[in-house]
Length: 126
Image (cartoon, rainbow, N blue to C red; front, top):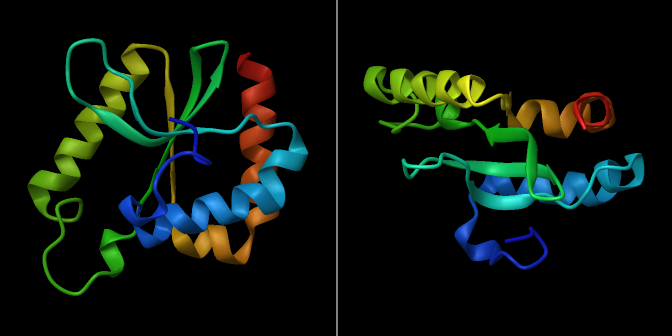
């Protein structure tokens, strides 16, 4: 489902920030509107926060990581959660997908650079 159609209340704060910054920077750089919570694996229920597609072909997967800033346990920062994310990244790479992990700090402090790089990689991989 495209980000403009995906319910904002289902998104985490970092995911909402990604969407806001995408409309401010990324769209003008030639990136297509990404898919939210994109299920990318053919047999496992793995999703990426966002996926940039070209005619239904996955070009880039993006994950908004912020659990390392949370107080208390987080599924992505526990030892098992961290390992699980890296297993997903490797499986994605096996399928030819690049996973880009972004933090809220990057999105807030250098959004134009983030989306310029994403747009460049997107154009090169199309």
